[in-house]
Image (cartoon, rainbow, N blue to C red; front, side, top):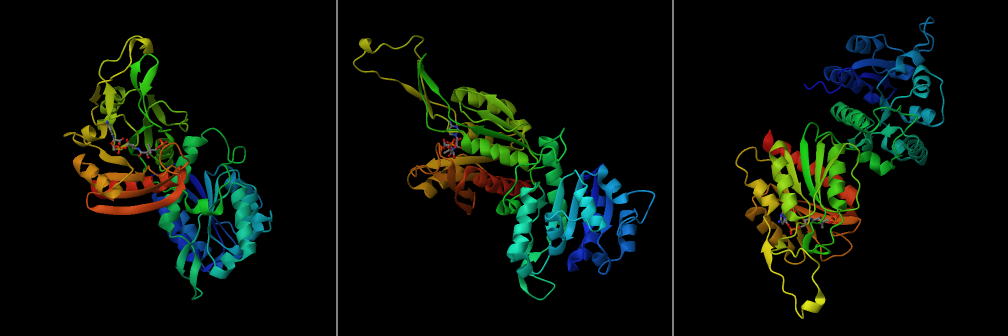
Length: 431
Ligand code: PMT
């Protein structure tokens, strides 16, 4: 198992829900990933899983009561240098206490005294979970900068069906790895309370990224290219780069190292993403071909000009000289097709199809002709999506046909969904 949590100190808070037994697996998985785990339990939790078990698993004394060790104010000490605090399971009662700042047991006091990222994995009966009081308390936690792993739906210990089942320990560990990775990229030098992440909405918490892009290198083309006619005129298109830059951010959030080869756009890449600026299709072609074999995945989101002007005028073309102006256009190389036909170190290649008619037929024709692994179709005849808009709606195909459709949403949300699918498909093909 990869030691993604090497040198990380993680405090595991266990509260009194039936899912407390899963805290044992969670503790073991965290240790297997290299973490140093310290456990704090509520008294109610000790009725469901023994303190001794968690002491044996964590190799540390487990804290339950205040002032068990008078010589040390343990509840403050244990979290002082922690990298992350996870409360799993988190009952409605503990969530309510934390939302209101209670410090009436070792666990809630430790949470109040912590400066590290804090993650809650709620587990409770579905009606308790959906109760407005609990929902408001969860909102309070999220708005305060805490992280909440939304529970699963399914059969619950109480015999009912619905939302409220704690996420499996494997999911929680993946979430923690991804979260710490994100903190390392974004907040290397600052502590949690000094620079909290932008508060997330409850629905966004469900979309917090997985770490399925960890250790992968992703190269993305974005924006338009411009093809000069003379020193002041050019041929281009309406691509804003929003989709490509959103894909780059989504890939980075999932743990990937990302480079954008970008045509001229107004977008800014997130910190840590490398950007290589180009203007023409020729320049984009050279920049991509120089890098492609060093990358695991190449995504062609740019709207590359299919043609460029053969004889670019070195001086401004005067209209007086011409009643008519005829430009001879020559075909540019198809960048994504060239990448997909590399014989050595061929990356996983994802293309886009910007279509206005016969959309699905054309997308399927493109994935085959260009030998792509996946193609993302957007219908650009709809001006509320696609070129230079904030939203998109896409259908994705692999070589065997349609595999997903993502309804209209912001390009950030669409990018999250695309990148999950791209990384999952990459792993399927390359494992
Ligand atoms: O930038 P935004 O304003 O956010 O808009 C996003 C977008 C609409 C530009 C994007 O979602 C999109 O559809 N990008 C692909 C645009 C395009 O040129 O599609 P195409 O169907 O003409 O090309 C098919 C594929 O071949 C694309 O992956 C394209 O990048 C690639 N291509 C095309 C020509 C060429 N010479 N080289 C290429 O690599």
